[in-house]
Image: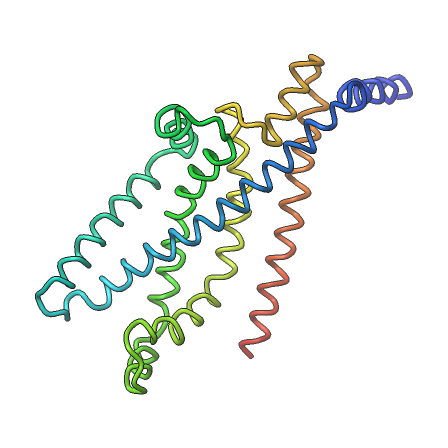
Length: 242
């Protein structure tokens, strides 16, 4: 047992203390959190726009008069469906590689490339979360807003969106956790995230156990922390509904 502990100590010093290799972990963690946060923001913006187009089409298209507005809504809904089908039907790592090797082939900004790839990917899932929330709001709420003199946009902004956002907030928080774990593939295109930091240490020391254990442990701690925040959020939302 004592010999095993001494071996662990030696491996720890070799992997993290020698030549300040722990910096690969901290720098990678910073990059991972930055990519996750920015991608989440981008995904929410894209998802909200797509959800508005799709829910507006579902709720109003059959009742709209023929004209430019109805045509533009149909075109917008068509492209939104293509976007959702393509993004949700292909692996995120393939999308990341397309961004790195094709779309941003001349760029050296790894964070920008990763945020673009993960943000667009997340937007497809966030769109369906928002759309389900908007569609779950009773039509009577919308009609009540219109009867009070609100226009369509004002009714959606001040009456429908607040209720929809409250109902989908836990799902959005869970999407953030999923996104955090998905960013672990960023190292496929030489982006120095947390997983890549552990891989760099492994390549330099030829030690596998300690770097991978550290990376897995950090991800686990972050997921537990954010999951706890989501649970607290859900409890507060339930209390506010009573």
